[in-house]
Image (cartoon, rainbow, N blue to C red; front, side, top):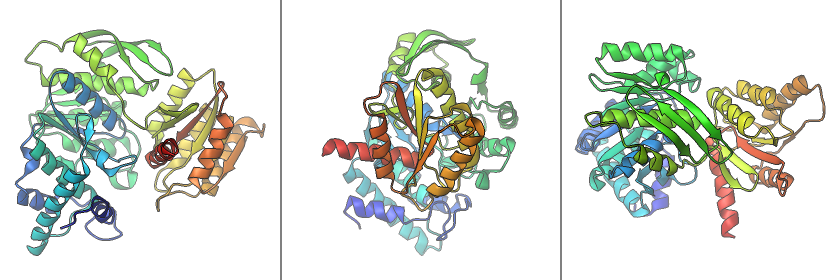
Length: 450
């Protein structure tokens, strides 16, 4: 038995990410996890759940749903990934993450059960499977009214696909994790659609007609009621860097002048999805009260997404082409009167070339800072800086746009912050990876503590 939180965290961090074999990253299915969950008493089946898959927007949509359910008087568990600063962020109830004491306790419960199944000839489970099992054990103990489970990768083979939800949700679909999910939107959508269950409603808002067609076919085959949020009419009434005011009219409900406290335009899609989910969950009643929806959306906050971390500095976890496209859309709509500087770092297993091209072509930043992540997966700063120089020279014909590179993230960030400090006309956006967003939040938090 391990009694120290940090020792438990280190043990989990040493587990392979997807596979049951060291140094492997393939996703092979949930047979071993199923044996473990049975050994634990199948805790994931004992609390009502909502299951969410998608390339982008899963965590934000989960948080919007949680806010609505909270305002209705429900206690809600939320299992998300990845974390930004603290591994405990992945397992939360309402607005509180799991305590260190509860983390250690559930860790030992899962580890002891795993040792028992290994003795019976089963393989060790993977990193994400271990955390999912811990979450399920914790939620069975806490007994919230609902648990929202966010997939880690794909859907069909994801650990969370063992749950039997009240409703399934599929958010924006784009190109990411193509090594594991396929290299077309249709193949990726098919993996996400793997969470759809027989006779269980599915709400989807993929942003892609091709993905919608795949999901619709799977839903019909499984007799699952489908709610396509893309058919919902909405208008943006007003947008600033701090708030968005919008109205939504569907065939079932109408809400006017809803406000979310963010300038990120992509969050409107996630809010619309959450509203559709909650109205479907409680469809036996009349449409949810407008005041509940308004109050819920005002409570929304999801860290690392167009988040101000200090004056003139915003972090956004956009880490694939689809997310960067939505990031660029927000910058050009909300910050069009500002000079833009970019701090960028990315994982080497991402398709980062189109991400960089989008930033260079559609934003044309005044200055770019390139650094490396504190991760074995990081792409080299020198290679990324070279791509920025190439694309900016193509766009600007060598007009003096500056690219600065450095491998030490903290040093590069501090240099960039000094550049924008006290300048009301300039904003620094830190983008390219959730690891980058988390690292910068940690640097800022440590600076405030000093």
